[in-house]
Structures are given as C-alpha cells and as structure tokens.
Image 1 (tube, rainbow, N blue to C red):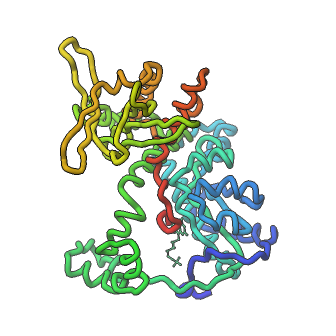
Image 2 (image 1 turned 180 degrees about the vertical axis):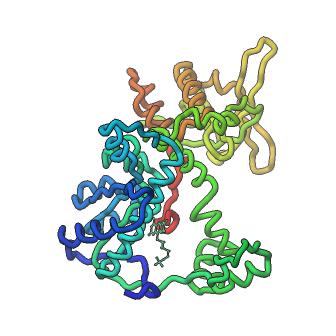
Image 3 (image 1 turned 60 degrees about the vertical axis):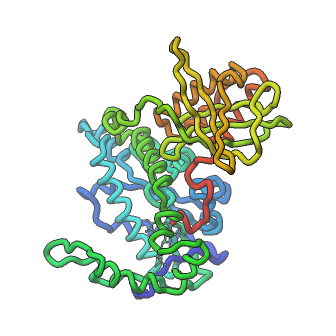
Amino acid sequence: MNIKNRRTIRQYTQQPITDELLNRLLDDAARTQTMGNLQLYSVVVTRDPEMKERLAPAHFGQPMVTSAPVVLTICADFRRTTDWCLMREASPGYDNMLSFMNAATDALLYTQTFCNLAEEAGLGVCYLGTTIYMPQEIIDILQLPQLVVPVATLTVGWPAEEPPLTDRLPLEAFVHQEVYQPYDEERIDALYADKEQRPENLKFLEINEKKTLAQIFTDIRYTRKDNEAMSQGLLNVLCQQGFLKTSDLTYPIMPMIETRPEVLECDVVRFQNNKEKWVAFVGLMDNQPYEIFTGLMDDEEGIALPKSVTRGRIIKHVERDGQKRYDFQFENKRGYKTTVEGLSEKFNPEYWNYAKLISGVLRYRMPLDHVIRLVGSLQLDSDSINSWKSGVARALKKYLPGSTTEDEKFE
Ligand SMILES: Cc1cc2nc3c(=O)[nH]c(=O)nc-3n(C[C@H](O)[C@H](O)[C@H](O)COP(=O)(O)O)c2cc1C
C-alpha cells in the first residue's frame, strides 16, 4: 500500500482475522526499535464480544470497539522488565515518570509499526485516543497490574468502507530548517488556508454555529474542561499503577487547597428520587463541582424555587459568634435578586453532614469519577439517605467529561 493513500478505517466486514495472520503481524511489529531493546510494551488482544462490550464505554461508546473483529490495547509496560530484574538479583528503578515516558514511547512505536504492517496486509485500522481518557476503566477490565498503563487502542478488521482521504498541512507547516521558525499571522493564514476553506470544515462551522475552525477544537472537540479533568484522571492512574508517587504531586496539588471564597457560582440541579422532587445546589470553581448541598424541594420544610432558576450563587456568611451560614441567591429575568437564607437549616441535618463530607472531598479535588464511586459505595441504612446518595451521584455525573459526547469529539 502506498502511504499517500492510507486512511483510518472505522467500518469492517464480518470476515474474521485468523490467529495466524494476527500473530504474524504482532510478531513482525516487534522488529520496531525500543529503548535498550527492552520492548517496554504489552498488547492485550480482545476478540470476545462480551469483553468488547465492557471496553466500549471506556471509549465513549465508539462503535468500532464492538464492531471490529479484533481490538488491541497496547500498554506501556515496565512490569515484565521489573519482574525480570527482581528475579535476576538486579534492583529495578523504573517506578517513575521517565520510565513511563520510555515505556509509552516504546508502546506507541510498536503500535505504529503494527498499523503499517496491518495496512500493508490489506486490513483497516482505527487508532483510539480515548484509551488515555478513562484509563482506570480499561485497567480494571483488562486486569492490568502495577507498572502497566494502556496508551493506545487499535480496532482492526477487513475494510468495509473507503472514506475520502483527509487533508494534511503543507511541509512548511511542520518542518523547520536549522532552527525553529515562529509562526506569525501571515504564515498561519497561509498554512491553514486550505484546511479552513474545505467544504467539510465549512459545514462543521455551520452545524456548530462557530466562527472559526479552531473554535470547533477549543469549544467542542477538545475543551479545556475535558482536558484538565482527564489530565487529572491520568495523573491519578500513573500514581495508582506505580509510575508516580503522590509525593511527586505534592507541589502541583498544594495550590488547589484554598479557603472557600465568600461567593461561589452555582448550578441548580433538579432530580427525582422515587416520587420525591429534589434539588441540588452545586457550587462551582473553574466550572467544576466544589461543594454540593442537596435536599427535598418542598414549600413547607425544604426549598421552594421558581422552575426557571437554574443558576445562582452560594454566599457564605460568618456570623458574629463564628457560626457559618450558607445562602442561595438568584436573579430573576428582570435582574431582581432573591436570597434564600440558611441552606443548612432548610435541609435534613443528616444530609447536611454528609454534604459537608462530600464537599470536603470535592474541594481537595479528588477526581470526580472517584467521588461518584465513593458516594455510590457508602453503606447507608435508611431509605431516605439512600435516595440522597443516588441524587448526589446523579447531580455530579453531569460534570463528568464526555457527558455530552459525539464520537467525533474524542478523536
Ligand atoms: C492519537 C490519536 C487518537 C485518535 N483517536 C481517535 C478516536 O478516538 N476515534 C476515531 O474515530 N479516530 C481516532 N483517531 C484517528 C484520527 O481521527 C485520524 O487519524 C485523523 O482524523 C486523520 O484521518 P486519516 O487517518 O484517515 O488520515 C486518532 C488518531 C490518533 C493518532
């Protein structure tokens, strides 16, 4: 196959890939270069439809995961080499960031070599970058041990489509002679002109009501919010899998520990628990949940709010005696403010205590998926507190990255 004609294939025929062909390709791909010739990678082959079904959500439901005959998860792997050292009176020092980078490099080189060989053999391949978006799920499903982190996924099958070739930037866009040439506006205009004028991209602008193609990337496909949340998840996984120590993270985590500002913007999230109407006030910092108060919507005992109220502010008051009080304030359409005083008093004290705990966890930036799992795992007795628990989980899920996904977004 001529490289000039290569393209990603996302639709596959029913024709299986034989073990013989797959093993030949996997074996040949190992001729790729690796650090110290240590081959710091592993590949998990998924053929079982049930396993594919389990993997699919970790890839944001991209359909290729279940429709391809073979799914390969390629992992950065220092486990095997570390075990080898331990069994040979050698003392390994590979539980660190540099080693992860080396293993990830090996794994990606292997992945690309496999792609070249598979395409040469007439197969179609799609690379799934979603592998590093929710790695913990993949680690759990594939039972990956310490010092093994998934870095790439390939869906592989016989092509059932021939999509148009995608564009590329011109050579001058990415090759620099001798020293790096900065990009001024004129150069950017020239280098991106073709991409920006392509009918398919112009259509994207129209559909998404955006002014520039760059905004499609910043506002829809790869947003700051998603990137930051998923970076946090990835750092967590690197700690969990033994490549990073929490002490390595002390410095970057420290600045996040702030005192609560006096005023926090908040979302009002309504939901139903069994037959009861509930409301959650989710205090936000950098658009991420920072604290949460929940309780029954009720004129008599709880909170009564006009239906139109979906945003507001939570204001902290410290009374003379040092007691803290939290008020909710919203503006109506005409700009008049209404304040609901004493959120804490409005809700059942038991919910309030749990809310304090959950808010503490949120405030110190435990990754949101872990907070939701923690809330879900609480062992609580009474029915009402169990509805509180599911309500909190439901309100927080809204802020998980990818909760408004289209396939395209996660490429
Ligand atoms: C790091 C990386 C992540 C990607 N992730 C996805 C993905 O999650 N889903 C998908 O359909 N394609 C994914 N792709 C494929 C790209 O969308 C594709 O390579 C690009 O649009 C160019 O198209 P082409 O390969 O057909 O030339 C990924 C490619 C790379 C290199």
